[in-house]
Image (tube, rainbow, N blue to C red; front, side, top):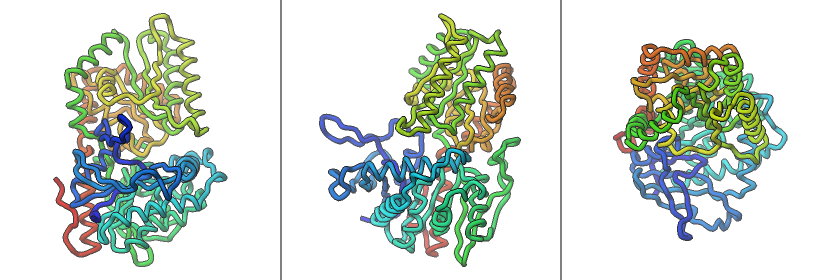
Length: 506
């Protein structure tokens, strides 16, 4: 049976494990993150499907069923597993997407590597995704494609399913023309995206950058725009944009530009933070810390995440404030990336070297200034640290959104409010009112933010955290889901002139 909603994403919508020699499909252990968030849409369609890739030695005989049916708490839906060889995955994802696209999207032109890109393989993989999605979709389905590694899928889909409502959503930053146009495939990429009914972004700045790129490459005209609402423009933040593009027109066809930041499951995290076992773990952490203040930073190991700058700022703090030695600790959760990729291995080595230097220079028998955790922490344990910490310091050099900051706010209460230091270059900085804004490229900005957070009084901390929690709740998962579903229905009515094909929002 064909599906009314098809989600196209590179990851499978479950955790695949082997138990007693049998393959088991488990729901994701955490309800947070983009996969469980998107799965929430499947239950709101009359019938939903998900398209992802799965590695196979021989794509003609992959050794697994390409299409399976899954029933879990999100409903019953189809999963189409596109078989790709290890070489195809390496080429289209690790090389083209991570070595060529990723640095340009995040503004790191010096890390851009064009030479190893195999563009024919990237095209072939995107065509295979499009074919798999088209096979699952009704003629008038909503087909929702996610992220930059599938940039060419919409253009191919428009050939295969001309009457479908095709939407694309970016989960990364989107740069302006001076940066994006470094990519030699820019015309093909933008040509594909402009076949979409809608292209979505988390914040207005990325949407404006996209409009500027399309104008520079295609000569498209901005048909309509709107003033950015106050809830999407926190004051004094570098990524603010006061106007949002709404519609682009080129050669008689239009593409909607859609701005809608995804959020966290605020209520779930808040409830988790109040569970007895989490509360007990918080007491244990605080007892271990004693009078020591805990600074918490959580991210992936990536040159965009600012982990090096974070450590250097902490080292400067201990250098100039000898009175804080033994009284403050940094817990850096930097989840290790693929060490087979040189760029990430270099970052991990630099982090480990800096941690060793700081602990060697300032540590003592009973106090270690930096704790480095390089493995993912289960959400319940992470929430305990969110709750126990005196502050969170989230300082990426560039980040599409960053949900860690919102998770931290959802886990707090106003009796122990804490503080949030937040990079101006994280997308969520335009949403989260009440953070201490910081420019991670400036030593003085990083240093003063740490000093401000460490000396903040209870009244100011409570007021800031109350504002932060309001912001995080405003832009939670439920708000994103409701807005996206309403957007799909509007697009379908405009394309087909009929009522929605999908079930109404719950």
